[in-house]
Amino acid sequence: MLSNLIRQRAQALLNVAAGALGKIGLTPNALTLLGFLAMCGIGVVLAGGNLALGGLLIIAAGIFDALDGSLARLTNRVSKFGAFLDSTTDRFAEGALYFGIMHAFMQRGMTFVAYLVFLALLGSLMVSYTRARAEGIGVEMKEGLMTRFERIALLVIGLLLTALFGDAPILGVLGILAVLTNLTAAQRMWLVYRATK
Image (cartoon, rainbow, N blue to C red):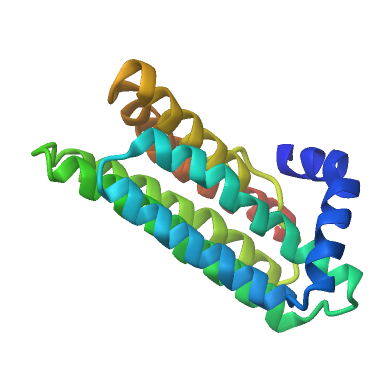
């Protein structure tokens, strides 16, 4: 996955930053919650129609998502609850972003965007659920085109491009996500079927 490749290349920098945060007393779970609150705040920014700014802020807030795991490993605080908290708040954070985008467009009378957001969010949740359920029955499942990193990266690109091209980029991205996230969930269902057949 693209996320793993980038994380491997940036791991040394992440460890340095995580070490500094650990020295000032931040715990991995606190970092997870700070990242979640930041994403909720960005949802408010998006709801106000500041789409390009929201895209920039997502990049900054995404650092928290990368650092909590590094901090947990460096401080020997890796825990099952920490992993659970991280994955759960990730789902809520993603929902906050989609809600902000949907609100911004509905305020302008573009109610059809709610359907795109619904399908994109449903697909995103199902991508995560299929992995969790597969692992619950003993099948490791990390494959798939639209993992969380790819979804957020695509969303950021669409949001940033609104500064140059108006609404078209983010509407196009929502359409792509509405299709590809659900196809990814279906792909994972097929892979689990093959693994358990």
